[in-house]
Length: 402
Ligand SMILES: Cc1cc2nc3c(=O)[nH]c(=O)nc-3n(C[C@H](O)[C@H](O)[C@H](O)COP(=O)(O)O)c2cc1C
Ligand code: SF4
Image (cartoon, rainbow, N blue to C red):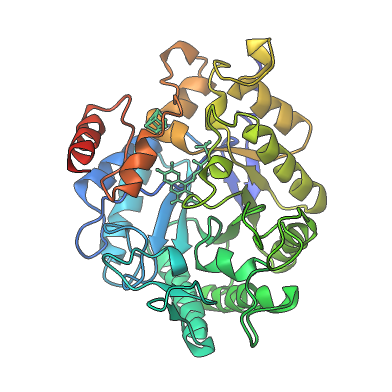
């Protein structure tokens, strides 16, 4: 079993990740009524810290409680800073090695109408959705900068500036954003918010080794989505997502996390399952295209489905379709610098530790059953409904109520 590359350290900005496994951000909707972490949140992240991955990206934290996607989403603000500081401290006490990044987000049109205000950049067809003014957008940019500073003050290693999965910043990038004025229309305009906000963030943070990176959906899979040739087009055109990768590097970001799809619409693209196993290859290809263009570290997504090779990919040799095979192959070929695990980190928070110590037999592999996604969609606390009794029960309750 070759673990040479997976277990090797890598420099990101001026910091070092101890190995190449990244815990992808996984929102679990278990914050308190003010968006602060609860005992359930602490427990989850302590376990992830113990799990030995090189980087842990703390789930999507909303910078606006007024517009949020999850009822009990974690919030990043002055009010929640103390609880989040405790979260970082407890993680470091368990294991000081992993780099801890916070994903900061504005939910935009994916905000939940039942408990918050849905806002968007361009009309959605729903008259109740508020179209943000340019001034409101500039204020949101200031909030991103403020929350980056809070993240630094509470001791995390960096921020992940969320541009994936159809939330506000993802909506901004796509050709369908034909909004008049400085933030819609041309590629230059659709990326203006990113450039302006990155400048605000960098200025607010000042000099130092605090990391800044971006996760974006390279291909969204909707008409007019990023990766198509025009506002209403379905024709695939990857020129803009590639130009954006270059821009991320030119703006001085430290890494790129390549994702794809919009969970609320094109979930099979975001999370490969047995109904479209080859989705994993698309993720690998997109990350490779980005890696070819940029010098900063690139994190790949979509690895959980591979497991120990027990999956529905059409390769007869199970050893050539496992997580281990593809992770080492993609790292060795230079197609990616780090590999991210999303669902696998819920199924087994100790995955990295077990894998890197050769304890493969004890890994609880994600079955890609979708139970955790059902919980998220039902606005319940989220966790693995296969291996964790607590979340099994939450799922049972959710099914009873529906
Ligand atoms: C329950 C759940 C919560 C998620 N939360 C986030 C999130 O907060 N931020 C994010 O960028 N992606 C989120 N994702 C997407 C994952 O990070 C990941 O990209 C996706 O599951 C595919 O990777 P995998 O095959 O390793 O699971 C979430 C996915 C699931 C299933
Ligand atoms: S609930 Fe299913 S899809 Fe989610 S982490 Fe557990 S095994 Fe994987």
